[in-house]
Image (cartoon, rainbow, N blue to C red; front, top):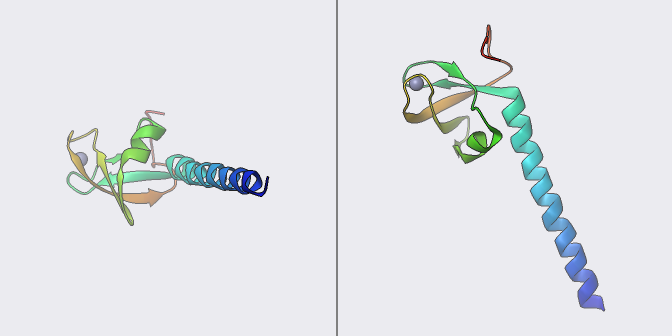
Length: 87
Ligand SMILES: [Zn+2]
């Protein structure tokens, strides 16, 4: 009985952690854009999944740049892309 309660608590904690991590990723996806270090193009990943797959290097992420089509480090910049028309 006691073990069951511990298992339920552990499950709730794990689910809570997953939801928390997901919320952070959604926040980053919605509120940040990126600048390619190679060609300086500003872009946003097309999908949340692409954003999540980027290797996190602090203020930079390794993402596929749509402009030069290479997997390069990109600077994370808070806010929407200025004059972003592909929305
Ligand atoms: Zn680029």
